[in-house]
Image 1 (cartoon, one colour):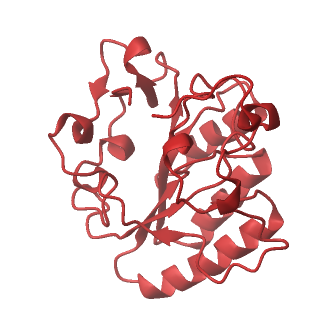
Image 2 (tube, helix red, strand yellow; image 1 turned 120 degrees about the horizontal axis):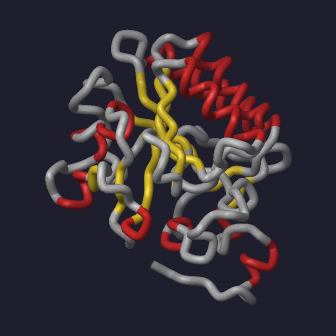
Image 3 (cartoon, one colour; image 1 turned 180 degrees about the vertical axis):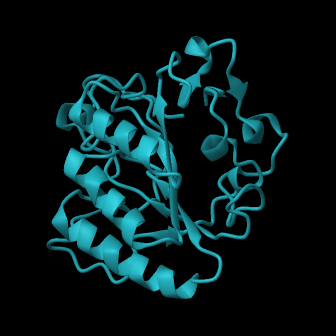
Length: 227
C-alpha cells in the first residue's frame, strides 16, 4: 500500500491523490452510472450466501479524506492510495440526485431479487443529512440493502445518525471502524478484541465478500489483516 507523508499535497489539501478521477456532478458531464456494478474479485459480483443470496452488488466511491473523519488511523495509508482507477464523486445534492436516479433503474432491473449496495469503497458518510438520505431510500425501496464501514464514531453527528439507522433498519449494515469495544465494528490487527473474527476472504476461507456475508450478519467485531 502507498503510504503518504504528512507534507504530501493530498494530506495538505485533505483529499485524494487521484484528482483526475474526481467528478463533481454539479458541473461535470458524467454519462455513466455512479452506483457501479461490482467487478472486484475481493468483493464479488453478487451475494451467494445469507438472506441476500442472489442479489447483485453495486458500489459507490466518494472522495477520500474530503468525506472522512480526520481521526482516522489510516489517514496516511488509506485504501484509496492503491485505487488509481476508481471514479470518485464529490459530496452534495447533485450526487444524491444521481444516486436516486440509479436506484430507480435498479429497483426495476432487480425487482425480483433485490440488490446490495456497498457504501463506500473509498470515502465516507459526509453529513447526518446524507445518512438521512439513505434512510429515506431504504424506506422507499424494499429491494435495497446496504453494507459498509464508517470511521465517524458515535458521539459525533454523523456517527450517531449511522448508529440510529443501523438500529432501526434490518437492511442497513454499517460497521464502525476502529471501535473494538463495539460489537458491530471492524478493526485492524493491532486493536482487535479477543472475540473478533478475522475476515474469511483475507484468510482464504471465502472467495469473496459475496461468498461470506459475515460483515452484514454477525453481531461480533471483525478483524481485517493490515494490507
